[in-house]
Length: 226
Length: 185
Image 1 (tube, rainbow over the protein chains, first blue to last red):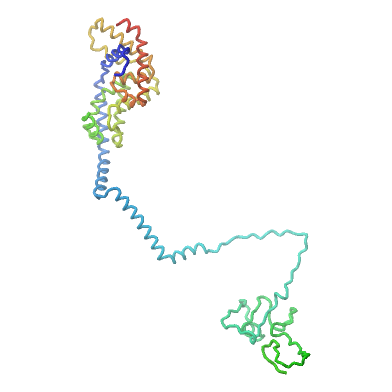
Image 2 (cartoon, rainbow over the protein chains, first blue to last red):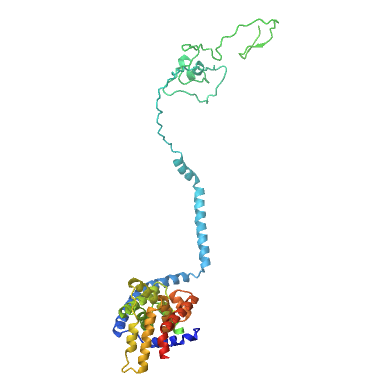
């Protein structure tokens, strides 16, 4: 004991005080002990089942004979196998998957567009008339160009073509038809004189100053000898 | 020591015999210790019940002491006493110990009367002069025979701190008993 010797007198008194017995009263001790034994029985009974289960689990775990590292390795292999299987399935059924996802991605998106408010402006509105150039129908003669039969022809639905007028697909194989403006050669109702390609008036022949009757090409694709 | 460890291991497995043996071995000592601190037999008895109930709870949960069962029980009792003393601030002197000290004495001699006076003075000094920590350390060290390390574990302080508390407590007691000691010896 590392106590200071000068404290020995107090320590002697404390030692005597230690010998005094504050004994546990027998009646209190008996009641307390009885209650404690009851608690022990409850805990031992309830915990016995839990401990038995724990022991069973521990034994079952130990019965496999695998160390913990092997268990971890097995777990990693299992995860890897699952991932590989998923990847393989995704590869084989990739077409279905693409179709499935496109079903969601290619859905038309309806957007509600509000019309802009009409603001009365001080600037007078300008009436725009369509240019004749835009409404002109180009008619290509069958002799000039031959359109392959498989060339698609643009036609308006619900507007059957009239073959007797020489319009539409019946007049020339490769005729392009504009959408809203009636087409046709010679129709000058809208100021179109019908001078389309192939229908332009043949220019008058002029005399060659050199009186040269050599073969000339007038653009019709044929040679003429005067 | 080996028996204590074997008893502890058996108790951890909730062996009824071991648990009963632990109660029989330590309940009177715990009662005495708590009686010295709280001075009420009923309160001391209740604390004993709480101490062993907590022990059972710990064992059932797979916890509890692994080596020093005695220190563990005293530590639990110490915390329960401290909690109760904080609740009711009850600080009665060690009358019970004095009362038991008186029992069995049929006709006290002069020496016994002097001893009794000294004991009463000591108990009074412990209750009035010492701080709570000093009282706990003095009781654990000199009345319950715990080592400095065990006392430090029970109270939850460093060993050096326990040494300081102990020396200051003894010095206070000696100072309070100075007159009586000089007169007696």
